[in-house]
Length: 562
Image (cartoon, rainbow, N blue to C red):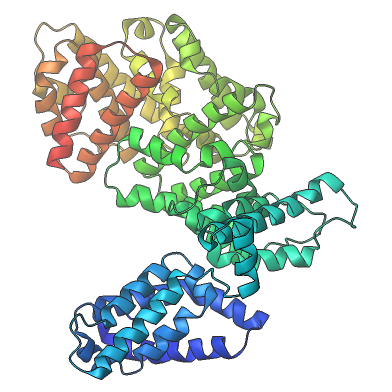
């Protein structure tokens, strides 16, 4: 389709032909073709209106001599009138044809003819049957009262008939035939956004027959899902769950819509991502293992395609947090074993990772982290546990619960952790860098991190901190062999945690960040870290007023610069 009025003449002829075909025959094939083209035709009408509103009626007739025929055919097509905003746009187009001060009989006739079409559109539900009008008058109903009531009763009758399938089981005498259900779903394609039809749409989505194949028309499922994504329809979560379970493309499109929303909204706060996530209904729907597995696989592919992008990692962690909350709320008595959600993971490891740190006394956090590290290490480095997948599967599982890695980094900066020789926490951080590193590379990362921690511990006891000293301790700008990017990223996280925690770090935080953020990528990484820290502190109810204030101020300043 053309994107502006330049291509309208060619589009005009195409739609004129289509309307003629649809008008000449009312068969299942023409109805299906009409429904298939409704979105494109609505967009054509919108472009036509944009062109018409800039011209007077004479110029319109000169440029589009058959515009009257096209609009008249459109006025008598019930599928078009029922679809989304087509009726409203059609009225706008017709209003463009009316001349306020007609100069001759031709213009007066055009005005009269146009007003006739407008009158027809505005009384679409009038049947013009005298017997019906007399009957409603005897009952005391005006047509404006009777016809909407008739529509409502028709919808309720169909809903009741669909739900009889649940009540009567295999009693085929009172069950709606599958062919009729399929036909009904096809008829509803252009009607799904109309409020009066919402009960029928819901009943179709929740309809469960005993047919071996799906009976709902695929275009119906597509139309409902699109209306849901664009907030043009309000359906209960149970109906949306049924839609995604019976029509995989709808679930996939919902995930793609979520990704597009996150990408188009530059540098989202995690709180905003959480709002997007909950609003999408995906975490709640993922309580059903079939939904969870599809969503999780799409996250897996996104992670692989973006080479572990920080935004994708953060989104996975937010999704998992929302999913666990929904699971705890819905599954008071667990309906599905956790293995159905994470089939490639050790069940005992999943149970440990699912613990909320808030439920563990702060003094036992180090012990919990050590236990997680030992379990992961056993699965990753012990060949006897190959049944739980390779290093990637274990890393992908750990990514879901990435808050534990951030906690490990903070624990390593405390004197208590240093006194306990935290090899387990060092291994956990090294493993969190990525699944591609082998045993030797992880060991080297542990050595690098341990050396940096030793320097930071000394600086913590120093009476005066300087940005240059901190940069030297972190190895930034040094002459040694360059570290792998993932290792360097991990050390920057430790330095930032140090700045937020150390009393003397607050005064030099801005200077240190300026020295570190030599590229836009590092700046973006630092912004993400500060945002994740505040988000995690909120969920852990961490009381650190000065650190929170500094993190918020730095985040606002860096976002303004980025």
